Length: 355
Image (cartoon, rainbow, N blue to C red; front, side):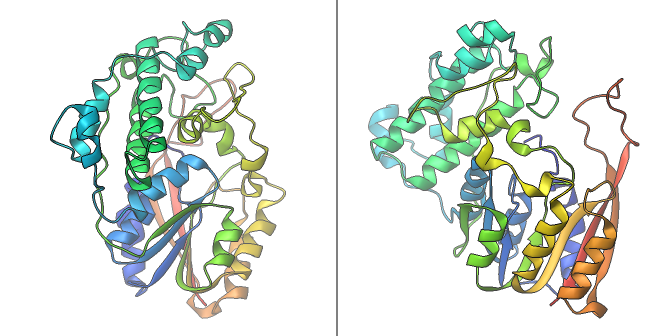
């Protein structure tokens, strides 16, 4: 998934630093899991991971890629899909073949929908929006009828969120849509069944970072990947959040030109230049762990002096170190009158300390 702060390209760098510091096993807490790329890597390395996020789509990814330990039993779907093959890939293929069923997403986020037309929204073509509606409604119905369990539900939901992102008519975030159809948006939506990482003892939850750390008790590794800037993820990823939450249990209201959701309970102090430093110190102070590792970059809103002071004050000062890696910048749009990027590359830092 296109995502600000996605660490997929940095997994080798992060994993190498962990090995260098002898952090190789135990319980790891990742309270800003996002698309769960680091949490999944830690699970592959044998950690028992607690992956959490304030956003519901983050919880969906954590459940699908971290908590799920084995392929779900989907044999109860044989009578529904009309096929004997009930593997996850076969079920994803069945969902891919569902006929279009225009519903909430088509109405709100495509230009032919009643609300979408009023605001000129071009997030999805009418065909892809109607297929998102059909697949999301089917997954919800299967779960309500107990034809699939929670593992299967979250695996299929993660596949849908990722598939929708691949055909979204955006530059990578949903704060705006492109005013003409991009090539990716004109492709038909296609589900890819998630690859399951075997292993037990991992857990996913939707929670505030501080609650996740406090509830974890004593553990081995706290991996932090907080927001770097003042963008609230609730506004930048409101459509993945909507797909994750669904629209079946009440009156879902959208607002503004882009169809934002009510997000008061999803706004984070970590995206506030005024409050992020205090939130960071409180979190580290409350973590009962052996190691703290934080991904951040040179353009982050928490001053580096604050990071070093907190790490040295709440850890063994002589074990503090900052590691650096340069990589190509993620751009959600091009340079323009209202924004100019500082360059094509960015320096990612890993701040580490032993407690």
